[in-house]
Each structure stands twice: as structure tokens, then as C-alpha cells.
Image (cartoon, rainbow, N blue to C red):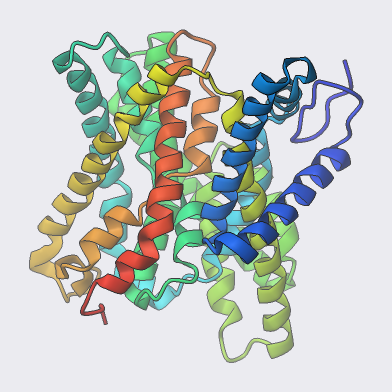
Length: 427
């Protein structure tokens, strides 16, 4: 057994962290070139699609030449990469910070109540809708599937939209500033709520712990409130000392040690530094350096992340009926997203145009973009892979992958076309 290495735990041959990283970067570069020259899809969509094609090709090659064990070697390699640790403990801090750098504070402040309601009430409501909808839908069709508590676990991990996927899909889209800020900020902040809800429901499912609103409230305040406070602190320190890379790595690690939300901390720190960076008093040369540096890291980590999502398909069960059943969760998740966004927007509509509740809540264009642009991605997969080794784990992971693949490929691949078709644009 080779020694363990940081982030990537590779269980065959003597492979170092550098070997794994180099392999992924080379594959990413080749597939990115193919996508750029021939497919011309958005990077996140193209790399996920091509990663899936590579996985399917290896499976097909294994059937044509059984003795070569192409897919088995790939499975061993990819199964040895701890996706949860790679994303949650490695790449996520960089991706969230880089995405938050481009959030306009003025736009975010204008829509603060919309963002707050969608990222809290919306996530909890969606969790319940997905969980109960999936459970009673299975009963209606006579399917003996997941128990209700595990349907709610799935609802909790799939309800938060992934800020990495969302920001990547909107990066080159012609989206009005206010709507872009609303979608991006909701994604940046609903992870803290989603992770807390997921942890509470999972404790009940795996360990039989009783649900407590008091405990849930305290845990949420600790995670989200503590994360926001830490983000402000490290963001101010990073701006004052111009050590953005250090505060991202050190701040995220400190958040884990303090049991506060690392994603919220990085989102707040990124927004603080990004807006301070654009202030007139900030050195133009430093501004350009900071922007280019984080844009480069963002592109690299995004590319590797979506490639991994596509490649990891090969490690999942090859049961066609299971996949068909799991893809049935996609319309349930989309319907829950529509209701959990539509109801808050309806409740906020009387306050449209006032402080904190901008006109976006009453504009018909915003609703479909918030629904179709609310992508799921690597964070949902990471939470699914963190599940304990129980019989329900395989179904939940497969259903999560089905929803994420549909989200990245179908929604991410068509969001720009949807935005172009919708008119008039939002001011």
C-alpha cells in the first residue's frame, strides 16, 4: 500500500500527488483543446461531456478487449482520488473566492432580501419538496425505493445550487448585472444552509438522532454567522496585506478548525477584496495582477473539477435500470427549484423596487433564469460521497450524479440560448 498523499489517495502503483495532478492537467488540456476546436461548448459543459465520453469509451473498450482491463485500471485510478477531499478540502476555497471576487457589492446590497430568502427559506423548502416528492412519487408508481428519511437526505444535498457551476455557466452570458448578482450570491450563500440541513438530516438517518429546531438554529448561526465573521476578518487582512492566496488557504483551514462555514467565509472574503480591489484608491497594477492571477486559478480548477465529474461516471454502478430510476429524480428536483424560487419571489413582489427587494422579483424574465440557471455540481456530489456505507448510499450517489449531469450538460449547455431568447432584458 503506497503512502497517503494530500487530497488524492491513490491506491495502485507508487503514484505521487504530482503524478496525479499532472495526469489530470494533461487530460484536461487535451480535452479542452478538443472542445475549443470542435465542440465549442462552454468549458464546464464540454469537459464534463468529454469526460463522460472517455469513461464510456473505456467501458466499451473493456468489452471489446476484456483482457486489457482498461476500465478496471481507470476505476482503480479514479476511485483512488478522494473527490470529497479534493473539492471540499482543496479546490473549493479557491473556486469560491475567485467567483466572489467578481460580485458587485452595490448590486448584492440592492437585492439582499431576495438573496437572503432564496438562500435560506428556498433551500429548506426545496429539501422538503424533493424529499417528500420523491418518496410519494415512488409509492405512486409502486417502486420500493428509498425510505423517507433518505429521500430527505437526497433533497438536502441536491437543493443548494453550486456556485462553481452557476458562476461558470454565467461567466460569458449576457446577463444584466442585477440578475447576475442575485443568481451568483444566492449560490454562494445557500451552501452554508444546505450543508447544515444535510448534516442534521443525515444524523437522523444514519444515527437515529432526533431533530431539534433549537439545535438546528444554533448550528446554522455557528456555521453561517461564524463563517461570515471569519470571512470579513480574513478578507480585511488579505486586502490590507495583499496576501490573497494565503488568506484563502489559511482562512478556509481555520474555518474548518473553528467549525464555521468555510464556503461562506470564502464568499464574504472574496466579495470584500473584490470590491475593495475596484476602488479608485487601489493601485491599478495590483488590481490587474490580482484579477489575472485569480482568473487563471479559476479557469484551471474549474476545468479539472468538471473533467472529474465526467470521468468519475466510470466508478458508478453500471446498472441501466438504476440509472433510469435515478434520472426520474431530475423533474422532481426541477419542480422543487421552481416552487422554492417562485414562492419567495411571489411573497417579495409587493416590495419590488424598495430597498433589498429589487424589481428582479417581479420581472418575468428573472424566474426562468433563476430556475434553469440554478445548476447543481461538484458540491452535491461531494456531500453524496460523504455518506456512510449504508445500503441507501449507492442509490443516493447515483441519483445525485444523474441530477448533476443533467444540470451541467442540459441546463449549463442551454442557459446562454435561453438568455438570448428572453426579452426584454432586465435593467
